[in-house]
Image 1 (spheres, helix red, strand yellow):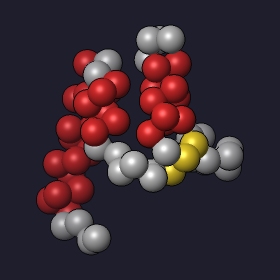
Image 2 (cartoon, helix red, strand yellow):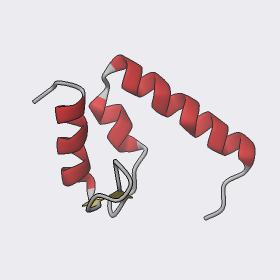
Image 3 (cartoon, one colour):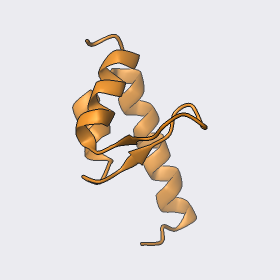
Length: 63
């Protein structure tokens, strides 16, 4: 699925707002069930929402 530049900007703005608010559930809603996150780049990818959820809980201090 291809996104327009405007849709990409809107998604990034929403992501920033959710991170600033510490809204892990909102952040997860932006990801597909089979999403892959490589953060930082070069590390083994996090695969799926469960792994990504743990990443954000830890990163946002919500263990």
